Image (cartoon, rainbow, N blue to C red; front, side, top):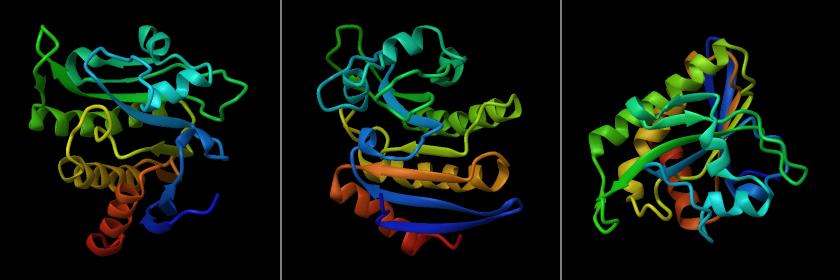
Length: 202
C-alpha cells in the first residue's frame, strides 16, 4: 500500500518516518505493532462506523482487551495498552487507547476537558515509552485522526497536539521506526498531510 505522503524524521537513532495513508485501517496490508484508538470514558462499544466496530467484525473485542490490559492507566491518565491480540484476519498485534470524552451520568451531555485530553495524549506516548523499556515490540504504530469520529471532537483541536507528540516520540524512543496515520476520510488525511508539509521541519 502506497502512502499519500511520507515525512522523514531525523533522530539520534537514525531516520524514521511519519506517513499518511488513505485507507481503512483494517485493510492495511503490513503488520501494525500497536493500533492507537480513542474512546469515550470506559466505553468500548463496537459501533458500526468506529474502529472498534471494524475490529469486532474481525473477531477482536476492544471491551475484552480493555478488561485485562497489559498496562492500565485509566484512573489517572485515561490511557491503556492491551495484551497481545490474536486474530487470523488481522495484522494488528496490540491495541492502545486514549479515552478522550466522558458523558454525564444520564448519557446526554458530552463533556470534553481540553487540558485533560491533551495531558492524556502526552501520557499515552509516555506509556508506550514504558512498554518499550519492557520489551513490547513497537516498530510500527498506526492511528486515525483520534477523537474525530463518534466522539465528534474537532480535528483542529486534536491534530497538532497528536502530531507534536508523534514527532517527539519518534525522536526519543529507540524502538519505534515509523508512525502511520491511516484515514479513510480524504479530508482528514489531507489535513494531516498538509500539516506535515507546511508546519514541520523534521
